[in-house]
Amino acid sequence: MRTGRPAVAVLALVAASVLAQERARIHYKIVAEGSDLRWDLPATLHTVHGVAPLLSGTIGAEPAARGEWRIQSRILVPAGAMTTGNQSRDKKMREKVLETDRFPEILFEARHVTADLSRFPKDEHFTVEVTGDLTVHGKAIRVKLPVDVFVRPDHVLLQGSFPLAWKQFGLADPSFGLVTVREPLRVRFRLRAVPI
Image (cartoon, rainbow, N blue to C red; front, side, top):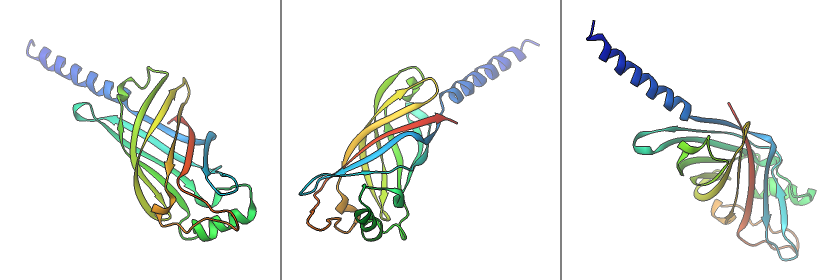
């Protein structure tokens, strides 16, 4: 009878460890409502402002060995839905620059996050460094950017901005008429994610 007690204690410890890891897992869905993705492109006469009204994605993280975290994150933007408020400029952007018939999506896939995510449910605000692949026009480029994380009771906000050199994606020059654009483009995002 007494030999069963150590086995029960070991099983209890293993179960407690599995439950702790399960609670530490992070699974969220990015929703368009409450999210905002904008970009500013410097030009000769004025700055061109654009918006991506549609987006979706998922964010997942789980503990791995030695305090590391495995990240699974995808953010998808339909390229044809982006607008600048000028119909002829938008048409050129879709047909000649982004070629949305051939490359309908802009995709970001996170590969690594530098942060202590074990404190994720406890803190209201912290900053992480995200490294991932941004695919535009069929070409993936590795990017690294700081992201401010705001944890709320029923959702999380991810917020930040970063410069982006559009020429590195092999895009045609988006200059339009007398307006000559310059690099870099500045991307600003505020993503609302809800638990799944």
